[in-house]
Image (cartoon, rainbow, N blue to C red):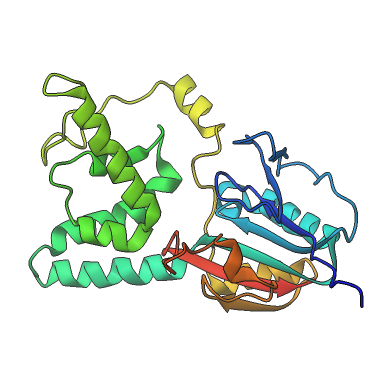
Length: 267
């Protein structure tokens, strides 16, 4: 009896979250095993080459036109019946939480002003920042960090790791170092980068170019020939053995990025 064929899987824009059972690709490979692939260009793979394609927090860094071209390329390289899994910041959930914290602040609830301020930053900063880290990083440099529980609830490992990095830098710098905590009056005060510096930053790909919700992402997939788009959780997928790869959740079952929307569709 022959062994079952192992699925051929592709992780696009993998960053540092990858698995050896997958072909891992990124614009700036973190290790020699990661393929260098520019997602703004046609993908360097053959038609119908993969059983599954996964791209987490990639699409929002592309313009709508380039995002559509990437989805079309994913459709081309998937086998008939193959699965695409796209993960993006969830615009709907973000807006709903912003409105909730807005209403709480308007009622004068304790701590609500800080929570509303954070949700405003989370909604806007990734689209408008002109330097790396933006206002999110400056918020994390405050001591104590306002609404820290909400920040960690929303961003998960990204926030936990980011806050630990800021605090480690501060501790290493010492009392006279440059990594001093920002206070409530000074955290917004910073010099504006030059036009050239802002242009160079926008070319790095850090800033978001678009956002999606469950309707717009499903429509994008259907428009490029995918069928049966469906919202998933971090733990469920049509991709066989999904839970073993720990790509969307850690070994304790915590989503890496709780602010995410997970959508799959069939080629």
